[in-house]
Amino acid sequence: MNISKIRQLMDDEGIVFSFSGLISQSLTEFMVETASKQFADDGYDKTMIKSMFLIAIEQLQNVMSYSKQKHIQTGNRYTSPGVLLVGFDDEKQKYYVSSSNEIIEEDKIKISTKIDFINSLDTGEQRKYLREKLKSAEDTHDRGAGVGFIEIAKRSSEKLEYDFEELDGKSYFHIKAYI
Image (tube, rainbow, N blue to C red; front, top):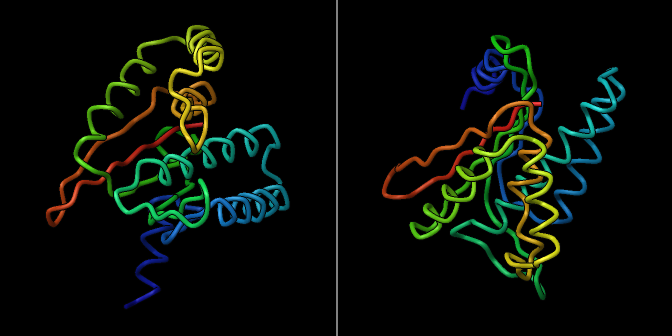
């Protein structure tokens, strides 16, 4: 392994924070706290940092919820393998948060239906839809209120980008949100 090549690739792609491994709620809290402090110390805008890491938290929770390999630790606490990237897109001149994890085939339709619908809404409609979902508790599950994609979308400056990839007989879900 040549770490210099990995570092160069990360620099070329504008990646300023990355994590790959087993994701849990406690690790999520630690990563967000550590990275937020680093960004604040480097002089990043506090509002942008808040949006960035609220999106990161939601994406990490989605990794735990939709992962093919989720493991129950205790009660409703899960750990799941996944990847999280925070970067800067030079072309768009915007920061982004992106995550990826292996999923089960049946979740593809559920995920794409949710995101496509949310992407069809403007910001005001997304806020209204979020309030309706929270009141109805329709998608509530043991890991949350089921509104993660809506939360990500309402904080994003663009429509959510996502895709599914087949690799070595496994299905992966990738999502990217711009701030």
